[in-house]
Length: 387
Image (cartoon, rainbow, N blue to C red):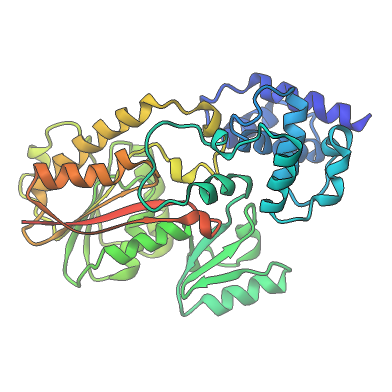
C-alpha cells in the first residue's frame, strides 16, 4: 500500500535525524544520497517530518504514527494518506481554521496542551500572547521580499502573470507562499531582497543620516546592512563577521544590490581588536547578536524537540561579551541597535538592562516585533544611545 511506503520513508528519516544539522540541510543531503526517492516521495517525507516536529512534545505518550496523523491534520489544509489511515474521522475537517482544528484535537485528546508544544523554561519577552505564539507553530511562515518602491508594481505584475498572487504587506514588502521559486518567476534578482517582514521592521529603529559611518559588527550574509543602506544610501559602512564564508555571501549580495562603497573585515568580537579598530569611531553600530533563534522556530520546528534550555544562558554570555566589546567604538550621542531573533526575555529585555547598567548607554526604545501575527518571524530590537 502507498501509505505503508510513506510510513517507511518517514520512519527512516525520523530515526536517522539527530538535530545536529538544520532539518532543511539534512533533507537536502539525505535526498541527494537516496536518489531512488522520487519527487512525490521527497515531498511527502518533507511534509510529514516538518509537521511532526511542529507538534513539539505534545501528546508524547501516543504512538508515533498517531502523533504524526494529528500533526499532519493540524499543520496542513490538504488531505493525506496518513490521516486517512490513522484518523479518518478528521479528513472532512482539513480546511477548517487552525483554532477550530485545535479544538477538535483537544476534544478527542484531553491531554493535548499548547504548552507542551513549546516547553522551554526561560521566560518569554513581555507582551507575547503565549497561546497565539504556540498556535503559530502549526502554520508555515510566509516568504517575504523587500522591493524598491519604484519596482514593486512591476514585480507584482510579473508574479501574477505566472499564477502567483503576492500579498502587499508594506510599501516595499511582499508576502508569498513559502517555497516560491523566486529565481524562476522574477526576471531580475537585483530588484528584490529576501528578508523576513519582522527583520525589515527593525529598520524603523536605525535612523541613519547621510554622511554617517556605521558598523554592522555581526553582519553574517548582510541582510541588516542591505536594509540600512536602503534607508540611507549616502553612508559609509563597515561590515564584519567572525566567519569569512558569511562575508563571501555578503559580497555577492552587495554586488547584486550595486553597493560598492563599503569596507569588510573578519573580526572575532570575543578577542581584543584595538589594533584593528583603534582609530574607528562610528555614528551607529548594529549588533544583530547570535541567539537561540527562538523567534524563527516556525521555520525550523525541529528546534522544538532538539533545543536545550541551558543554551539560552550560553547565548546570553556571548551577547554580553559581543555588545560590551563594541560600545567603546561608538561616538557619544549615537545609537547602538541591539537585535535578536529570540522571544526569550534573557536575550532581550535583560540584555538591555545589562547594557544600560554596565556601559554609558541610555535606553531610548525597544520592541518585540510579534511576527506570529503575520506569518513571520518574531524579532527583538532596542535602540540605546551612547552618553
